[in-house]
Length: 99
Ligand code: FES
Image 1 (spheres, rainbow, N blue to C red):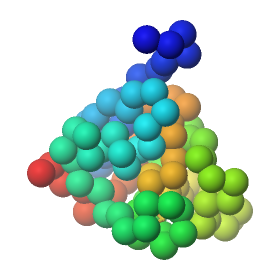
Image 2 (cartoon, rainbow, N blue to C red; image 1 turned 135 degrees about the horizontal axis):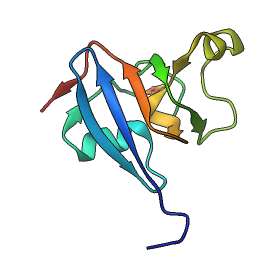
Image 3 (cartoon, rainbow, N blue to C red; image 1 turned 30 degrees about the vertical axis):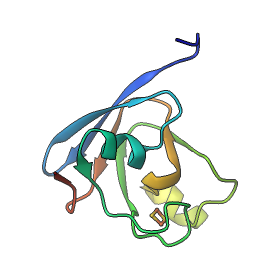
């Protein structure tokens, strides 16, 4: 296991689903590996289908400019398909479900 390998926990409200995000997986990829379905389409940060609110925690993006305005970022919106956690995170995504 590489030295910088990290595992963070993602919790999704209001359904209160929880999953681990390992290594450099995005929040969307890790959810799918844990059989948790989050809305998605393009998976590259442009369509905004996956847009949801980050209630707590920090993320970084795999793309230079994900399809979010600076204002939306400041308001706490994230795009899970291109977001990697930098801490444990809590998301608000009412359409999330275990599959
Ligand atoms: S799935 Fe398209 S922006 Fe995330």
